[in-house]
Image 1 (cartoon, rainbow, N blue to C red):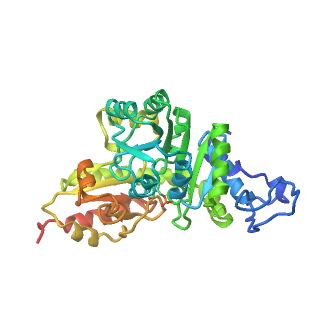
Image 2: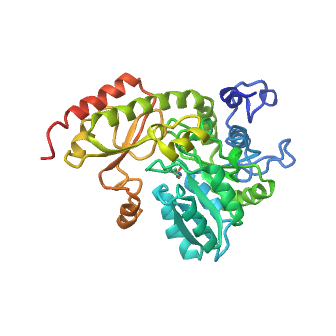
Image 3: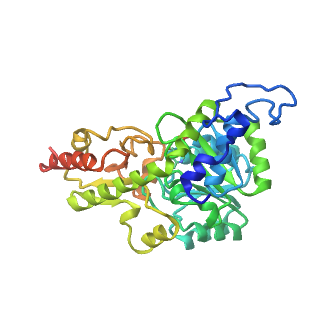
Length: 383
Ligand SMILES: Cc1ncc(COP(=O)(O)O)c(C=O)c1O
């Protein structure tokens, strides 16, 4: 079974164990008879529907073990619970705002330090690693929202050389486009809320690894902390996985086209999209990704009125989140990244004029027409 969709349809669940049912059942039970055939006891510690998803995620990420959580943030909290006081976590300079918030506002008061680095600069990252007791490197690639790509193979080697594990947040790329464990990462993290479930109707998270010892500890923490994915959400996410490859094809095709429309309009000072990257960043995209993803961040020329543009868009509602079938637009400075202080945002180039677009699976021509009519309304300068 080499094809992604074939694997997605057949991993994690065997119909023969369930009266031949092609679709996995949802096991809403919280408890199980003692000596149940699957060895289940209580749904927080193990549930067959969640386990079906965990196994499928592991196969699709080329890992041996999967763990599903109640959100991507819960996945971060669980892995961060590996750290003891005095140890540190190093993370990407423009990570998701909630990741920044958890590390700086929850871990820091517990005596767990952190460092921030731009992982596109490996020499600077090596210096940080040499100067601090970093045990976990948490790398988003592409990053949220500036879409920077880190060389996973090189970063894994660097982290290992300094006694740290590399966790790659693969939310933006998905295992269809990028498989960090194959490149040397120790753990893959997901907000399954995004592309993996893909329908904006379930909040969830996951960790995947092939390290048996690490898995045992994470499995213990999953049960002890208790932020597990519910059976119903596990079922929804399993269903989402089955069409992930098909959806990603369409997401990526639409995004590539829209990124070109933004670039060619001449109305943006920046268009960040891995499919348009050249130089070293473009090389890394081609080396480690099967496609450039479907997130675009753009900065409108300041002579135009951002609000006017956003209001004119009909197919891109202003909303948090990403990775669902519907296109969305987000204003990071006031929404997803509002918890990152303004000085930090300025340092990394996350300006107030930046907005982030999650390109959905609508008809490409409809999306292009919508963007073009909104751009046409920008002929007049800011009033
Ligand atoms: C890249 C990335 N990682 C993690 C998260 C956190 O996931 P959740 O919202 O499921 O807690 C998000 C949320 O937007 C994200 O964009």
